[in-house]
Length: 392
Image (cartoon, rainbow, N blue to C red; front, side, top):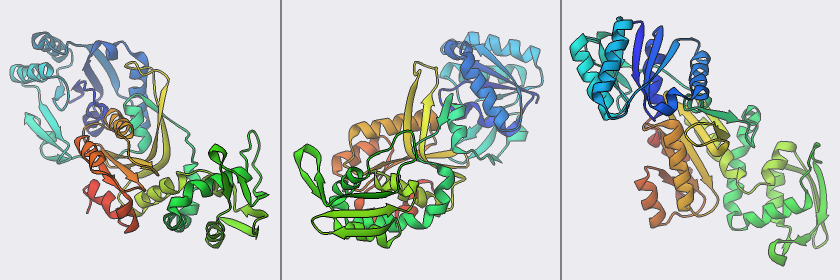
């Protein structure tokens, strides 16, 4: 086989698994009009294969989604031009699959498919090379965005430095659980006495009044116990509290400064470490920002996934919430999973609040796993991630 005929599918991974596994000289995509005319999307696919270490010839043929006879004629033309061809029938429309069956029957061209459940290729007709063949491919987080026409952008977190802080994340989260109800006020107080610095390196040493203006005209006083705990676990240094008068301390560095000024960072960092500790992922990224490139009506749109991990050909999308789970958050997570991960992708939402029955029901309908406060308290996040990824 030097030519592989692919039935283009809206799930991006269906379009690249067989090509990447068997690496033919040429790939012919039978695709809808918008893809056949979208040069930018085609270039993204070319870039994806280049990142994988090979450069096949890519041919995009505009095909009907509903006219099996037209698709069959196109396949026969392709088969005459490239006689040493095979057919991947994993994706595509019903009409394309019907045409593929007729093409294989008329020409004897090998046909095969891929099973997501088994992560294995299977011979359909005359494709002994694909018979019961395990898929040994493995992708990083960025690969999943690129194969779907997206771009991974820098997020709020410098992932290159996170490995140096792994030992801090469990104590940081334990501190959060202890002061969970007061956490927004604690972080707000730190924000008030260490204002954001734009355009230059922020100062690490801070000094402020013991009581500051809170939100909505309230007063917000220093939480002495929380500040002392931050000092004990090494996130701040040189802590001095004059009760009722002033507070001063020094952030350990700019990274801990950023995390102590953001309400949600503690959960995201804890979830990131849980993915690392699970030991089953090939790649883990915190704050993965994806831009939906100019394709299918999603120009200049970007979204952030709090934590994303990849295991083999299966990505995991994690949303972290220090609040109740809202329908909007579930819908957004499902859209991102389906668009950039495909049917086999996994999604979970982690919340530091108890999850109510309505939210659980909605999540179940969207096939999103829910990990709430009670499970976080028991330290079972790592085990839940393994269950979600079916990696016991």
